[in-house]
Image (cartoon, rainbow, N blue to C red):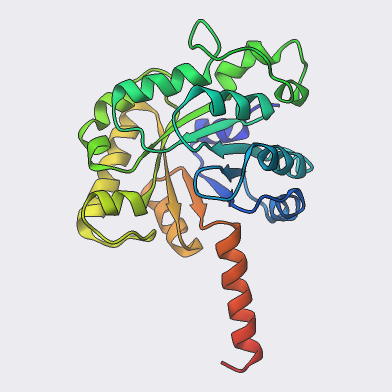
Length: 254
């Protein structure tokens, strides 16, 4: 299956990404019907483990063309290889702060000679012809380091110049903490918005997409207009709880 997120970026389009913290195939199956371009299983801050990640992929697979991705818990080859073998079409990796760390991430995501990924796509090969997966995986799998610290900003150009990086993904809460600000998603501080402008400028120079985690759909839409090409809206837990609270409030006449 071709990676439709890559296809959208080549066409200059933005994609809207869902985010799964709930470890349930049923929940993922229902959530996937909402019209997302991609859905990311969060293995860092969600309550997902490897088996629940696989189950979520199985639930999502009923939606044609939906791109499954994973935010891994850390930049290490074991879990990255396992979720790729399970069928992930993109790896979002937290706390990539140096060019060396970015190069390591690329290595873990790609088969030789571009990388050091071990062969064994136990489930991923089922997305297409089993004999062709290894021939196309290096081109189809998205490698997306997170930029979320002052150290990463200090090393931004070097990180972006690492061959094999397809996009970056901004974690606004950790970025805020690194800058001495309160952790939150939809940021309005002028210094943060200037950082976003810098990220968009530097990624555009290199033909790399920029992604951002957002708290609300309105802010995500605004960020698309600003130039971000991957926007996430909260996560399944947040959307469910907010909708439930609004329904209870309305029922009580609030």
